Image (cartoon, rainbow, N blue to C red):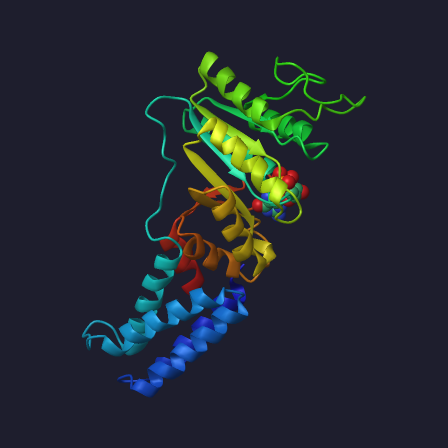
Length: 313
Ligand code: GDP
C-alpha cells in the first residue's frame, strides 16, 4: 500500500533538494506533481484539490527558515497536510459511562466486518475488557458460524441466534434445515445487549449484514439496528482495495446509517491507497483502526501521524 505514491512524492521532493530558494514556479511545479501523484493513487478529486491548494498556499507563504532547506520545508508542509486529511489526532473508542459500551460494525459484504469483530474482540480482551460479539448478520448464510469461529480464535464469547429461534425470543423466520434461522437482526442485536448486561460484558461488538453494493434494504436494516441499540460507536468498515468506490460507499453509509468512525481493512494489500486518504476527509469521521491481514492479530490502532510519515518515508 502506498509504495507508488510514496515513491512519486520522494521523487518530487528530490527535485527540490538542490534549490536554494523556491520560486513561485518551483512551488507550482511541485504542487502539480503532488496532485498527479495523489490522483494516480486514487485519492478522491475534492480531497486532492483541497490538499494541493493548502500545500501551495503554505509553501508560497513559508518563512525562510534557517533550520530547514526548501525541500525539507515542503516535506514538512505535506506531512502536516497528510496528517490533517487522515483525521488529525489519533482517536480511541469512546467508552460509555455506563457499561456495556456498544460498538456497531457497518459496511458492504466482504469489507471485513466479521473478521474485524474477532480482531477488535481480541484487542479489547488484551486491554482488560470483557467483550461479547453479537451475530446480527443474518443475511449471509455462513456469517453466524464465521463469527463463532472468529470468536473462538480470539477467545471471545459470541452471542448468536439459536437455530429456528432468535435469541430466546419467538422464532421469526423459517428454519431451513442445516442453516440458521433467518430471524430478525434487530431482535438479535437487542437480545445480545441484554445478554451482555446480564453477564457483565463491558463492551458489545455487533456484527451486521452487508450487501455487495449499497442498497435501500441494507441501509434500512442497519439504520433500524442503530435506532434499536443506540450504539456508542458506529464503525464503518471499508476495504481499502476498492479504490475510488470507497468514497461513494462511505457517503452512502454516512447518510443512511450515520457513522462515528472508520476502520480501513485489507491495508496489507497492494491497493494504491486512495481510499485510505479520502475516507476520513469525505466523511469527517476519524479512521480509528486498520486491519492488515486475515489473522486475529493483524490489527492496529490507526495513527494519522505515523501513516503520514510512512507515506513520506
Ligand atoms: P464481511 O462480509 O464484511 O463480514 O467480511 P469478512 O470479515 O467475511 O471478510 C471478507 C474476506 O476478506 C475474508 O476472506 C477475510 O478473510 C478477508 N479479510 C478481512 N480482513 C482482511 C484484511 O485486513 N486483510 C486481508 N488480506 N484479508 C482480509
